[in-house]
Length: 93
Image 1 (tube, rainbow, N blue to C red):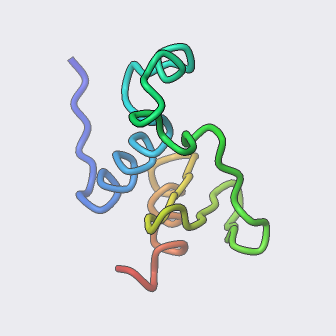
Image 2 (cartoon, rainbow, N blue to C red; image 1 turned 180 degrees about the vertical axis):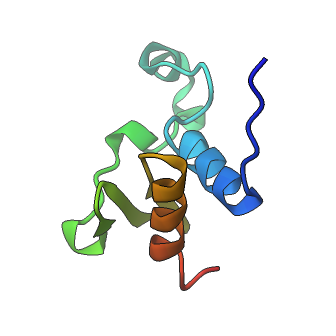
């Protein structure tokens, strides 16, 4: 069994990114279409395209605001992910 120790801020960023990626877990486009009009979301996360001016990049990582949240994408080895996380969220940490 593999056990990973992930710092809480990094784990929170990953959870937020995962949660923002879809409207709800298991929800498909056909499921949304089958909802009554008053229950359908105005737009899904897949429809969202950030304004190019609002995207901040650091190497392969980037961040942008969406609906009051900060969407953070990080990748690489653990040290690289931590450095990207700290660089892109320095003002909030």
